Length: 186
Image: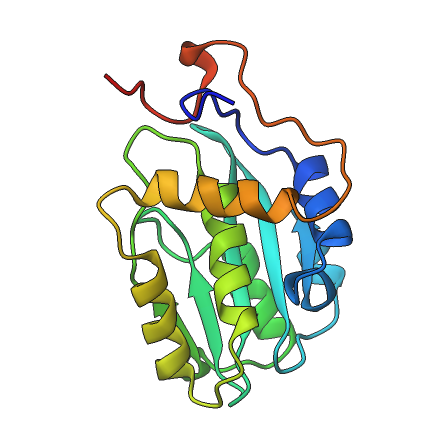
């Protein structure tokens, strides 16, 4: 496959990955689309949610919320946006104080790429795979794992490996370089 021709992940792709992967991610992470997160129950320690929501200017965007084994929450957005109002509302519904939430400040998505779902899956895969009590160490582990000059390519490659581990119908090939979420390689 031409690594430069990668399409945007759809919600059906994310759901198929989460339901099919043999990784811990598949049993401890759920997907919520838009307001569905407000109807979901609270997260147990070691669980997370990938939230997909509409943006008027950008289409759909994905963020992650994960509850560490020490009870603290990690919020991850691969772009420099403020915490989404649905996540704040979820925290209010479940009486989660703001002091219990760490915003993971690893802004790694390229400015014009649409790789947020890849970043959200990679983040949740990394943090759910470590069994560490200290949330600060979990964040440190994530930042070490994602450190790269090409983080967009790194997370796409991680998702490619993930879907190669189980039988699925996902085809991530874009029809042209102009439809690709990654820049052309010269």
